[in-house]
Length: 141
View 1 (cartoon, rainbow, N blue to C red):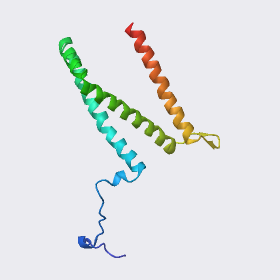
View 2: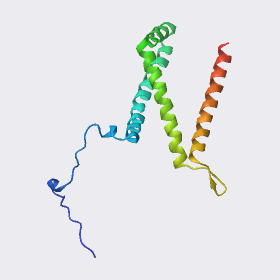
View 3: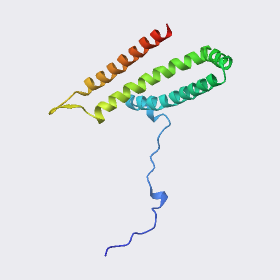
View 4: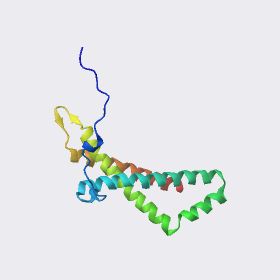
């Protein structure tokens, strides 16, 4: 009926393990951008944890929230939030670029160019952001 599978494993000394330097990702700009995109996730995760702590401080009362908000207004936290915002924008743009590749939009037999798809997504992000800022300012009074 066929040969049985052999349960032996290859000799590890015979396997090829290429030596890679720790700085392999600095050799090509596409690798560097990939690693920056991965690093952006760490900053976004830290931002979300800080945000959840901030929401928790709201449940503890106004004094606890104000004390926490004062800590967040220190120069270190302000710089962190600026870096996190820049990483979030970078992450969003690279997401929009990959979306144009993975899910191309077809109009009839024609496929929209990837750059146009990316531009439309970024335009939608900007439009929604403007609407949120306007609503925030209207509700704030």
